[in-house]
Image (cartoon, rainbow, N blue to C red; front, side, top):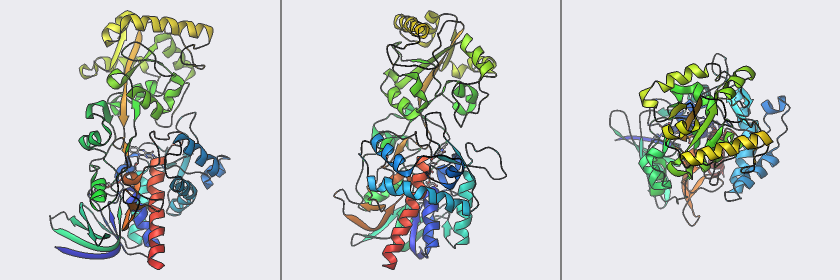
Length: 486
Ligand SMILES: Cc1cc2nc3c(=O)[nH]c(=O)nc-3n(C[C@H](O)[C@H](O)[C@H](O)COP(=O)(O)OP(=O)(O)OC[C@H]3O[C@@H](n4cnc5c(N)ncnc54)[C@H](O)[C@@H]3O)c2cc1C
């Protein structure tokens, strides 16, 4: 067995693991990080960027959201059912973290994602320039990794951590296995667990939140996020907190049908369930975590968006009514060609349909025909009068009247596995037992400890996941240094 020793042993080098490693090393702690995969950065390599409030990038854009406003909004969103002190500290640290990353050479563009969201996402400008987008945050992970190397953080890759060593109730190190299969014992004053949640382990997710694997599609996820951190922390004495789902709504196999997803996802198209009934004010679908809550309650956990040909032709001339930061603005340009391509794919037959009448559409999709016809008649009447008497919609109201009609099945989706939190921590990110006693020496950061959303991800503040990962890592490092130096 290989023996190692340091002040801080970091379990995993994803975003929060890198943040805690760099911050601790800057504060003078010796740090060794153990990462299961061959690369650092975890799921953050796939994303766009972190939330912050009152950053210098926002100030330059004359954005006026204050930390106090953001804090109060978030606490109301969660019904104060989360650790207010921790939310406060994450929000208050967020602007400084943007500076910290900029000093490492990371560049950001601040964006809102969708019209009703706040301009909080600090999306990373990818190395070499260009537009921020999916995978752009890989550059941030690279800069953090370089900074860790510069500070002498030892990074042991392909070395999954198997156990937290606990003596007399205190965490005193970890056991890992290296790429050759040799065991490593690393003794340390502190341990930080940062394994990114349950992610790709859909069976464990079902056990924790009761959602069946087939009910949710994972896209852009990374392997290796299987709940190790939750199990390691609980085994070492940390208490359990009920994790929560973190879903959005999109179309099947979205990466291969990107423009069609742009045309349907979070756009205010008439949306019904299998019973042919509307269930959401479609203006709200842009807030995709609320949309996911509504879809979760429908038969088959799905919705169906219907669009007519006249509307698409109009949007091709005027451009999209609603833009998000991910899909660009050209997704209607070749809608009819994209639609024919998807309709010709045998494996897409149960996801996307075209019909010349509403009755034919209902038959093809399997929606209750009588109800769908009645729903569309009512909807067209609301459009004519400019007033939605059922679900209070006021904007972008267009009748469904010009065939052919197109219908897309909308399903629950998730990026990093759709679940957050689980390990009980206090506002210092120290693991605590179920009766709130600190497990000395043991910290937890990132998604494993992210119990701050209540029951619904706050997508009004885009970038919260990465912000929690970065700022929980930095805060934990500061508390460790404080404990070490008295
Ligand atoms: C496609 C996609 C897009 C996203 N976009 C955004 C975005 O724009 N903004 C945003 O805020 N969030 C976004 N997210 C979410 C965000 O990336 C994650 O929430 C964030 O990376 C979480 O940080 P973390 O440190 O908790 O976990 P990760 O960054 O996922 O790191 C976890 C690490 O733990 C390692 N690991 C697991 N078990 C072990 C073990 N036993 N031993 C050693 N290592 C282990 C894994 O290999 C991984 O490297 C996105 C996620 C995805 C998948």
